[in-house]
Length: 115
Length: 112
Image 1 (cartoon, rainbow over the protein chains, first blue to last red):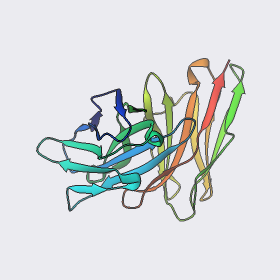
Image 2 (cartoon, rainbow over the protein chains, first blue to last red):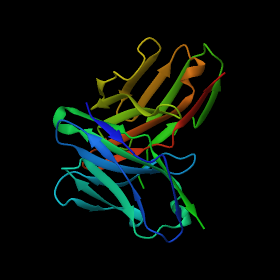
Image 3 (cartoon, rainbow over the protein chains, first blue to last red):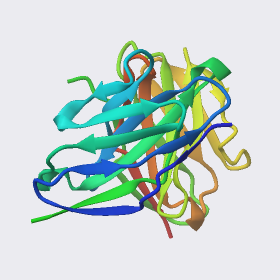
């Protein structure tokens, strides 16, 4: 069974500074990887996904993530954050090769942007 | 933009009452998920359907929860009887890994 570990429950960052949110996964088969963002009292919005091919994936709102198979990681980065990026960020994995499409989520990382 | 619609947005009910949550997936999406979000457990997969057939409901307490897709435009999650520990936000999502999964805005359930 797959699992996802988000190493930081909370990350405070100053506005316009770079940020990295860490995600590690565990799986015995090939995986698809996702990052979602959740703003207060809203559903989850897809930021980006890795299915195959280039290990550097670009998403919406200036975010990108890099898939590292050897380190089983899929860290999310943004070179310069804005106040509006304050939200909860979730890393997720699915194992379509294992016959299950359901997403397994990490516990989330609360990104706090300080002015 | 196409969206997943969930009703109701909020529900407060008394312990022991039946609760039904509804989801209208995006037209053409053949995979539909139900998730539950709590502070303690985070996001948990309860059940999912493909082409309206239930594929996995192992995350769902079978004695009180049931999930159905009576047609391609409606998925339902029912709790009977409800308990205070069922208080959570319930999300529906539809789509595929290739296209990405779209989540609804959720139903916030409070059982008192």
